[in-house]
Length: 281
Ligand code: NDP
Image (cartoon, rainbow, N blue to C red; front, side):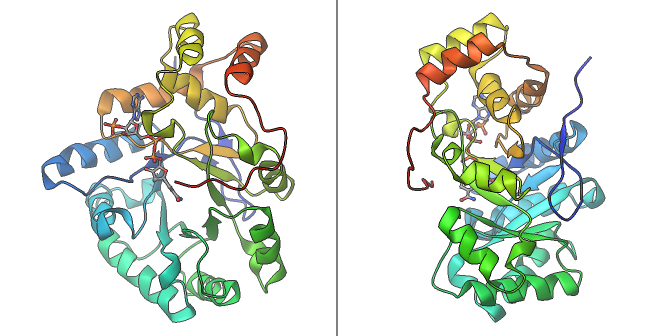
């Protein structure tokens, strides 16, 4: 029997599954739209109900695909979208959210993120996020690609500590956040949504990863996801439009890797020994 997907609790008290679903590169090609819709709907069936999208992806067309997939199933999803930094003034954030809601065919987001830091003062973006929350158009807000100094600055502005999530590049080959940012987020109970959790496929040919995967009759992608699922406060959000790979990703939850094999992977993908500036894709 499949294990249940473990859950994770952001500061606002909601409980969400700790394995989500990404949509970057969806909506780029009309011929693939149906396969993408089918994948999003299967993700819901499999309990991977956190669906991550952004106004940036395919210039809004990824949100359109998500909206189509959720049209009769909106309540089953925990829907996340993001505002681009150059839209993140007070008025710009509210306008961008309105456009995203329209494309997604819904009247509310469960979580709205600032995609990365830009020129607009954090105070203005946070004030807009709080206004959207008051109006019931979003349930919570967070950030993405924020390093420790950004988080500290965020927490110093009015209501900045209402931030519910930090979405970050994190996978076996990108472990820099383990030095300081991940502990900071864990201490503040801010879940980290780990993006590009299989490094967009680039780590899957690593011989050590293949070796460990074979020992569990698993795939390298599953072990890469298990590495993140193992960590407190971390939610990987792998993207796939392929139903077989989606089921495979879901089954990463069932893996139970030994300490010896984790040590093997630590040797192949060493944890950071010093501060590394935050990487992003
Ligand atoms: P991922 O690490 O999730 O890799 C996605 C790629 O891997 C796709 O090409 C997919 O192809 C392939 N893939 C998925 N599962 C498997 C598998 N089991 N075996 C082999 N190949 C597989 O990269 P992403 O960059 O897409 O990151 C995930 C999500 O994170 C994004 O979709 C987006 O929602 C978010 N993100 C956020 C960023 C931010 O700045 N906040 C930046 C980047 C991503 P196929 O579809 O053909 O299966």
